[in-house]
Length: 271
Image (cartoon, rainbow, N blue to C red):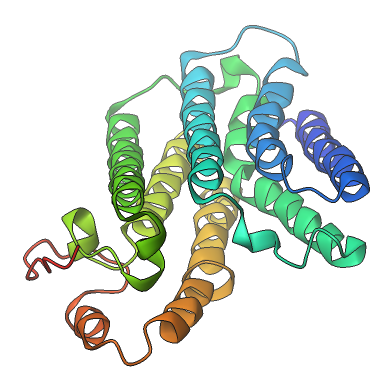
């Protein structure tokens, strides 16, 4: 692995988020947060790819393409969500508190550095040192695609549901489509696609134990964030307050898996 290119990629990530924080703190706005976050994924991979010179291999371009596709899709989704809902509740009481706001930006930079590490490592390697694509890569890409599609479908279904319910969405909950299979299908898709990205990356270094075990920080970190830190725990706490005493929601929680989809569950018709 080309350490110099990896360091430059990390520096690009830190630089983007530092500049983003300075501007955002001065304006007390969260408008640049998601742009800097998703943009840092793409910038890190590109810097790693071009900083060592030489032609990029098909494997490197594929690794870059999956990360870029995910980042651009996420950016469009997040911007659309803020536009649809009118605000980003993640930053209520945060963007006016510079020290706390700085923590949010620091966590974002850490998120990018850790989750994007396998992609950066592959892009940072000299192309001639990487093996040709094979059936294991096809399998890894299939896992990534399955996760990506599942997340896109979940997010789209919820966006349509929110648009249909308008302000009434705060007293209702979605339990149709893939949301009848589990309560957080978007998070399941997110975790799955990063597992696919990890598998794709370790195939680039078949004889490296460092890659095999070190790259696991990427899917493990995103799983930790979504299931233990800021994803499901926050959503569950909000739902517990919002739907206290709601028998329909209690039934939905009781009968529907938390994270892993189970298509054979009953489909709740609550809309």
